[in-house]
Image (cartoon, rainbow, N blue to C red; front, side, top):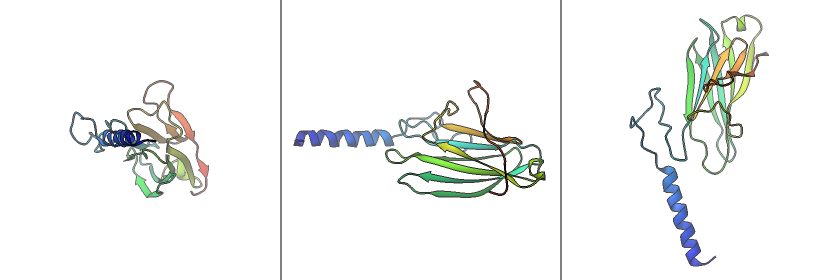
Amino acid sequence: MNAASVALLLAFTTTTTIVLAAPAPDAGGGEQADGMAPTKWKLWSYEHIHISNELGSNAAMTVHCTSFELFGKKEDMGVQHVAAGAEYKWQFKPPLVFGKSKYWCVVSPVDNDVAAGPPVHAGFFAYDEDDRSIFDTNFNVYWAVRPDGVYMRDVSGGIGDLLKSVWIPGNP
């Protein structure tokens, strides 16, 4: 490789890095209505995960999520208490070059018909970069926790919500 090739490679790499880091203009100039960062990045966007409690009235649940990234850090997001009808949400930026993002979550109902018997829980990948689906729209992934299990929400209105995990007896 001669000096001209190296200079061209460095110029391309530098330009690419600048382009990847520059956000595209957004209409609001700040946060979205839900308080999360804007999603309109050129090639590196925030991913938003939403897990809603649809277990029924007065039916709380706990959510415990952990991230796993190849060549990256593991983050335990702690146990979150989600009231009936409420939503637990977070955002992150997947790695640009090395690694794949995965978030494993375990949900458990608290004080409701599902929890009336022995303890139950359900585990699922709330986000798996290797398993992109038709349900990912505008960098959002929506989940619904219901009395019969955990559903990936179909926000496109195509085939309907998809049951991804059922209740398993025992504590997580």
